[in-house]
Length: 520
Image (tube, rainbow, N blue to C red):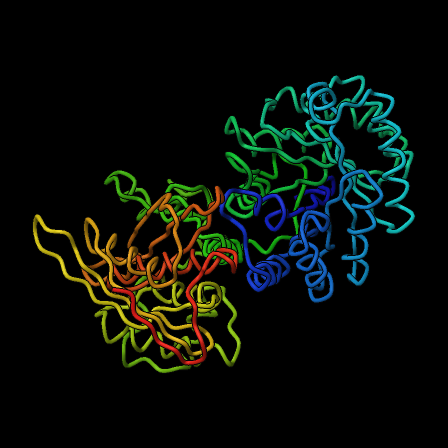
């Protein structure tokens, strides 16, 4: 790194734009855990949500603003008074706060969404940014769909926002339409002509509809952007957002190309990735850059030979740089609590004194079922304790029966957090389908199974199954995950986890204190 290298601000929008991906909604507790992980990772800005969007979003932003220290806590607002004041109300107790104001500017949005002329757009930008600045010293403005906005008009909008007090101007490729060369030219123009006389940070926000979100963001950096908006694992609407881990490692690996550095602790990228994956119930693809299971795997003989001679032959970065351990078998059933906790810390996770006891019990139970315990098994135990144990209903008992060319039968007993229990039987084309039917009957819910994905956590015949499901209820998707050495039980746990995320009104089972009922 040379003296010419500048700080690149990492603006994480996992909790706002990332959560907008269908079915990726998180509970307040999950959002707080993710925000804590982001703070430890070293992100500069956490966009915690859109306070005016819902009471839940407002409460999440407020809680994160009150509890998370270090990063700037940001809330999104449309360019109108109600949204901006609502955002400030949620943010005002943050150690450092930012209001992020946005308004669409492209011709198609002006005509079909806003029904506004250019003059009205400019007026709304000026008024919105001015109001936000009167409440908060740190204000960001985004012209939504900037990449499809006429460049002359975009320049006008940017100038008005800067003069009204915006400290950051974000240029979003809202629908993933632009290309790297095109975006580079746009940013170079804005930096040298429009913002040359303003002390304003130029920012970029890219979507991945054409698979170029990271490339476009890096092109913007070369054009003068000094903030990138991104998400863990690249989650987000449609094809997702620019992936934080890819940006961080790109500028770290190629400082000869990108004249910037970040304050990210890259060894925490992998734990953050897995936490977000569990919180959103979205598996990380095996071939995902930086944090995928195959990112540092080498199977071809010629690759393996090269790796044995010198790792640099086929690795441009070390797995340890992103928090991936090279070790495999680590613990067994005779391992003690201290070794277990140390391994958790070595893997980059933190766990409270209260949770360590429960996690250690889970580890001992697993060790009795599995001959070998791998890092991935330890990781799964920790993440399951932190994320998926929430919800009103848990699985108490499960039995299934299957015969060839016959319907499968299942019976479940579920337990409510208040102590009540209910049981039901179900049939289906296979034990998993039968068990899902029994859960639906026990709780009186009716959902449509949208997707079902199963993978092994580690290797071997006794590997744990990690199941992710999504169910549709009232035209909305809800995700769930489950983990167990028994694939059927893992599937039921995932299904129940998804159902626990449904609105309270979805479950119609009538229960009184300690009452048990059975549905045949």
